[in-house]
Image 1 (cartoon, one colour):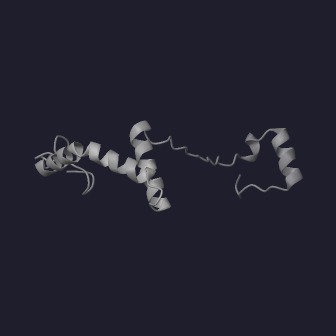
Image 2 (cartoon, helix red, strand yellow):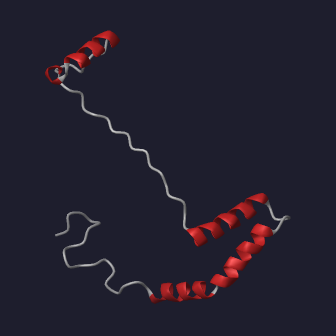
Image 3 (tube, helix red, strand yellow):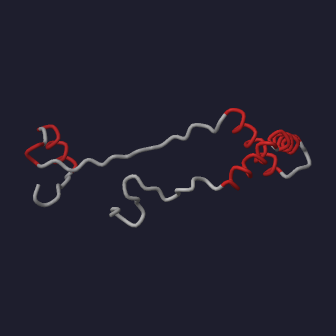
Length: 107
């Protein structure tokens, strides 16, 4: 039995027939229109009378397709569990005393 209602038993799949054929047909039509789509984006990006937002969007789409999307940065903050009083170095204890830091009860 699966671990939850969203997991499948080993050797089973939720899509035994594979990807629907219509998706492949839509993909093929879209790929045949690539030149038209790129030219449309290029024309719109160069059109001085087009709305600013439309031109920026077209230019961004062109750059993303030509050079890939920019790398996304991620910031990770880790919070360490507080040490017990016995694990602290003398310098840490002195710094805490100067700042009047208190540890959670039971440390």
